[in-house]
Length: 557
Figure: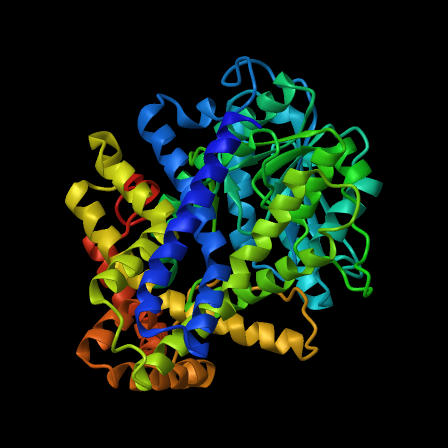
């Protein structure tokens, strides 16, 4: 086994053993009643994901603080990827479905202009691949692309195709393009409707593909666009820190068997067409979360799948408010849980199966978390917490929190260690203020998200069908009525849990607040993080601002 993989699995195993031992120390003094055994069993189900977080975070952090060029240090490709001509033909494929084209097309104009400025524009063709079903929306969409094409210096390089039926959702959209419209195309730059990439990182991805003919796909790390609204602003501030560490650490041990996140990536058209055609599942349903399956299929066919773990010039938009975020999470949950049908099928390498299993683990912990919370509240209410040693409980809670949030926490530490990186965020104090507020934001949001995913799993278990629906990407406020209708179950669970904790005294309540307090505050949290006044305050003080926002001229958005 490669050294990086040995390190990852050693961290995963060691952290799992230590966390399990710490939890046993907490539960054992009072004796192993049914509730303690059940709580321990649920915690053991959560532990592997905590080990995955730590196993990616620690190596990623060491590379980020120790390497001169971290993305290059973990890219298993030799040769110059920063200069040289582009000799291949590339399609920029943008998938849309009922989108506001005034938001979709400007980033593509900026990309084409940047490619032209670099003298490489003639190698690229822009394809807008539409799955829009509403005829009126489709007419507006086609008119927007026609105007975009007419304004281009080379109108022939701008193409538009709309499917009458969106069979197979996005994966079917892409495969239909490859089957019928990709003659003469060597590479495809895959872009979502909310994707934005600059010319320099796109050309780097192309040169990576040219440097190694065995590479079938290169995924670029993607960060959130500068956001005005409070919810995406805080979310992507933390996501950026965590994903930088996560992607770097993951690349250390996965090498050329990396992930695909479905956009802001480039792949070989012929290889993707040959190996990434997705069949239906045994029950006849469509595979929803296609990207990880496609990466695993490419690697099983002998193609290398790599990651450029750099942030520069690769962006996406994040959901504008908590309801949209949770709706997206539920879509991902439904898709990832489908992978259980694929794990035992032939045609995957062991790393591909690991990628699918890891995607399942990311969501499988939600009902276990809710069960741990409920069992802990039950023990508190029935006197089972009286023998719990407080020191051991505090230590276990701290270790659990650090393991779970280690990518994000180490990402914050990495920025604070370097003056130049702090300066990109407006200085150390401003960055620290954003990090502190984002940690509080995450602690409030996570219990709500875990509860929401648990409820979604129950609905799926009861036979509710899952599918992809159009997404709202526009900033909006959330009224109290909407928040109450959506989060009254979460609030009731929170009230019941804290009623149980209150029976054990103030210590139990205080300890539960960071891990479950968000349930009590779900409704006001949803409203506040979508409030224009809160959003304006954050912008005015530069809190949770990302480097791209700091670089923009005053008054621009």
